Image 1 (cartoon, rainbow, N blue to C red):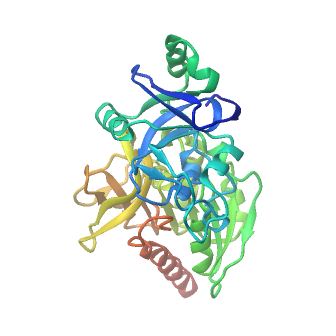
Image 2: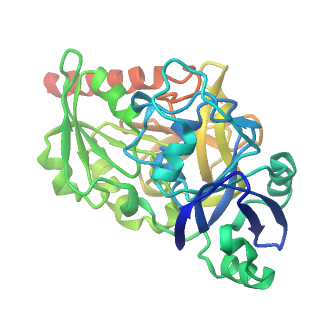
Image 3: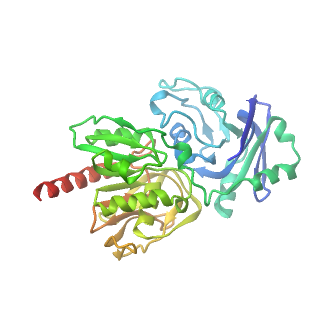
Length: 390
């Protein structure tokens, strides 16, 4: 999405957030000064802002933090989920005036200026969140410094001229451009082919800790590229954009399923798994973002508090098994979101494949869903035993 930036802010630099419905919030510039456009969404975590900012799934989005006080723990290299901040813009109510944490290596203010993130502070983020919750996520723009003085009609025109999130394929903007390998850090199981659609560092670390040599592949990888890694399994990551605009990745995934390679997908990988099975996807009104989303594991009856970042979901019957429209046998919804009954996971019965709509690596959320990595390892080991028996 179009972004222009020039200079950095001071505590007195004016800024305005403009929503596509004409709603305006006047505040102070935070970070770089200029204009940024994107989809305005809110994240409900009380902590973990660094992991949010560096999650590639937030590309193209102006993120509103519902927690009022942001920046008090600073930033550090260890908690980076990628090499840079990906949000299109940042909205906070009360930026910390100083950092107070022994692990901090720099302030949030310094980090967002360095990465050129246009933000706004000093607005009523509670009112903004309620507006998005009631009206749905919408396009918006932050205008700061001289751009804050632009005519209101011109600011609104720029916002409404920006592309909508629906229909956008953003994985190419966040994926690696060349394959790389992360060696296993536990007893080796085999090679795992990972399609990077916007993956987080913590996910890669967890996969390596299972005993996989993790082959990270660009989002443009073909099935031949996946086969060339001699994988014992395939993983599709989280990522930004509309799953309906990722036909190429769905086609490759169908080849993976046809080959009966064990498959695990998270977040965007769950939506693409649904499409590969023959299911539809749709845009949620305001999505799920944050580290406090309750999900029911239907197989155990256990309620998990999970980390989410998605604006789209899979259409599927919540109760009972159903036949895959694309011929992959029996499938069921394995997990359900308790706030709005959204599909949060899929499990195939006749092929070795499952997925969830959230982030089991738990960066920076709770660890309730961490067992899913072990579930995938067990699926791969079971598949290897069956193949050895043949």
